[in-house]
Image (cartoon, rainbow, N blue to C red; front, side, top):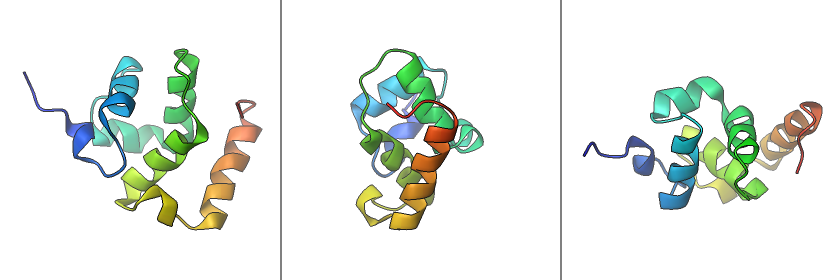
Length: 89
């Protein structure tokens, strides 16, 4: 069994990694290409009950920063992008 590369990223645990795998995201590079908003949307579209904390966790993982330490303005931009895409749940 291959190691789970997503588990090596900060903020991502077993459940969030499994959710991302279920959407077809298996590597940090795939996650980076999709970006936090689209990755979050993909998880929600699969029916998983992910909160916006997952959005911030993914964003922090891509920056190697704890999600609580993300700049508040950046978090707001992510939420704005989510709203613009019509999926703010």
